[in-house]
Length: 325
Image 1 (cartoon, rainbow, N blue to C red):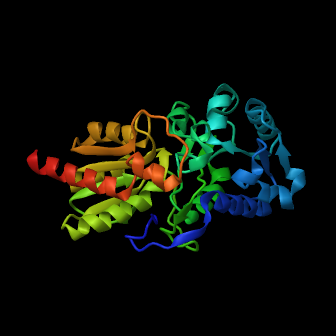
Image 2 (cartoon, rainbow, N blue to C red):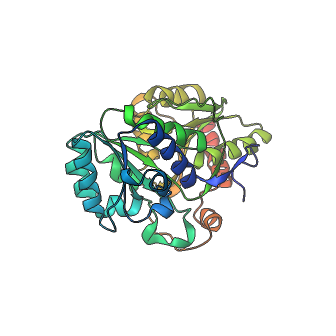
Image 3 (cartoon, rainbow, N blue to C red):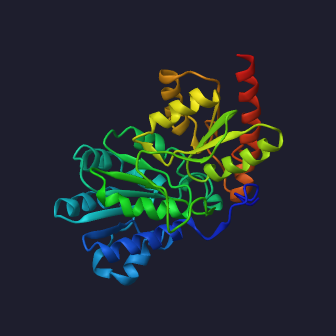
């Protein structure tokens, strides 16, 4: 399975976590206030790229996520801009209280990087899969939440983070993703979704890798005479209510796709907006109340119905529902 193949997208040579490492190093070179806090996983998250060049601005706190967050908050109070980096599952599940009190309630300027989000870390297993991270971050009102969909938006998100007032969460991934946008001219604005494909019959709203899957699905649906708009909702909060409302009113049907639990994820938040603005038929592609076993990432996506084919099936259903309404 090659993500983005049906849509004609070029797959990145590097996993998104490596792209994050490059983006963080670029930012550290241009901003001397950037410091990196690591939970002894720098070789996996690729935060080690900064350690290799700026060891004096890299702090390995060890496997102690609560302390990791506390030290990061302290450095923010001392005038630095911290990137607090570990796996989503470890940070959000082990240090949630510290994130809530020391970062969210204090509204400090800092970025938390949740690496290895979703199920595509594959063989590392369910204990390390961040499948509830967006729901947990959604419970912290002051956080800006960003889920980059390709290498270009990862670079743009990391670069933008220090200019965002208050705390930021950026989700990263272990797998390579296709290029949706050009690196040199990336349309990225916090809180503003990108329409990456026009269509009038339904809208596919995705975040992260599911944007590329949505473009693949749209290419298949087009062969059946169904034209799907594809919306990259890279910012989960603040959410682009205008773009969602326009999708509902202009296409009359919506499919949400995410590599996350359906409970509390992107789709549930989109559904709230649609219910308030312009109710239309909706379908949801995501994890259904299940912990995933270890396995090949692409086999897991297929088993748990997180592929372009699943988005296609949901698209057919929602268009049928729209016509029946």
